[in-house]
Amino acid sequence: MFGGVNGTCSRFFTYQYLLTCRRNTSKIFTKSSIFHLNYAMDKSFSTTHLLYQKQQTSHFSVSFGKRLAVTCIIGGAAISVWMYLQQEKKENQKLQRFQQLKNLAVGQGDFRLVDHTGHPRSKKDLRGKWVLLYFGFTHCPDICPDELQKMISAVSLLEKDSLLPPVLPVFITVDPERDNVEALAKYVSEFHPRLLGLTGSTEQVKQAAQAYRVYYSAGPKDEDNDYIVDHTIIIYLLNPDGLFTDYFNRGKTDQEIADSVRRHMNTYTSLFE
Image 1 (tube, rainbow, N blue to C red):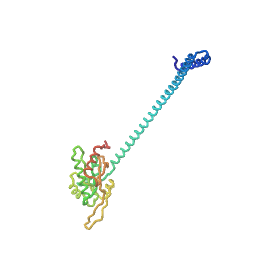
Image 2: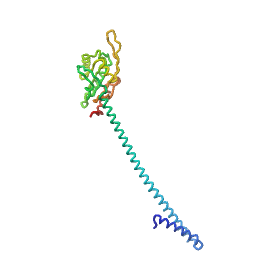
Image 3: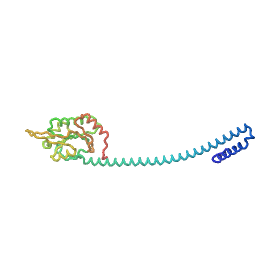
Image 4: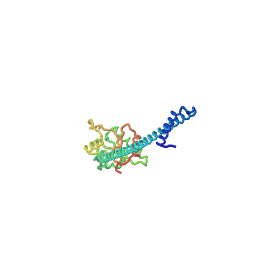
């Protein structure tokens, strides 16, 4: 019947009235009447106390709910701004890395040499091709022939898959003193019809080896004027952008090389598209 603050006050004054009645009339009321009076007073007090507690709880719930909603909105906005800034940072880093790779693709491993047919060659002639590259020399007794044969075998395995682009095998000599155009032409013809042999002057070969971080050093000559050239034994993989993509040491088999090249082909994206 009563609502809000007015209801609470009315019940409070009713309780006060009943309390006064009990004190002033306890002598003339019967025990039954006193019992009913006490019951009415207790019920009035309990109802008033519950209404007060309900109002306090309702006020606290509304205030807490508002604060929680405001906090969630501000927190969500802050997280959204942070995520946006992080994404923008990643995009900027990606663009910087992309530009760095493009610059490397243009200048990395450049050379000026002559092929086994006498035509001048440079790195730009390899652009647009997948390349397996090996540095060695034609007078090598065993390691170079073995590594070249393994490289050619990997190329042949890849050629069986008609969906894959062709791989160009390239051999660069580290012995320009003996490996002239004629010697190189005879040597590469023994391995594969598409094997490209490259040679040049002592300085040109030195620059090419340095560009690809290849070490080589000619040993002492014997009485037949023969000598061995110590050099890095690695097969390099270059993608069509001209970037180093992978390398394979002597422990890799032809199948492992072919599998690796195939994986790189399947995930390749050009920097210049």
